Length: 104
Image 1 (tube, helix red, strand yellow):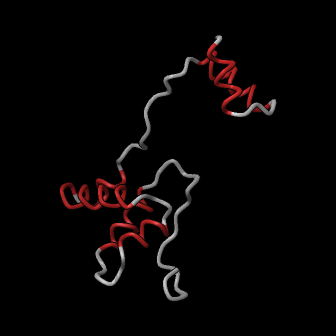
Image 2 (spheres, one colour):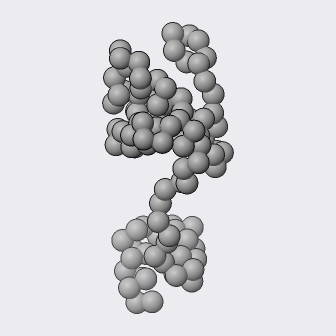
């Protein structure tokens, strides 16, 4: 919403964040918009917005629809992950779970 007008819509639950990315980059082209405030409004870092803007400059706005979601593969083995999840469900703190896993 800008000035009471809906200018775009996207769903964060969707695995496809292209519409959100295009909206952010398009809004960032408005000279009166503060980029830090724009990033905060979309709950992303200023660095993420900067990377999206650079990608759009290099490859065009269409490239914002084809970006994979970030993040690396888990370094935990599935058995350890399951054990940690069970511990947290049982009320363990992070420190307690860490100590218990060290004996694993």
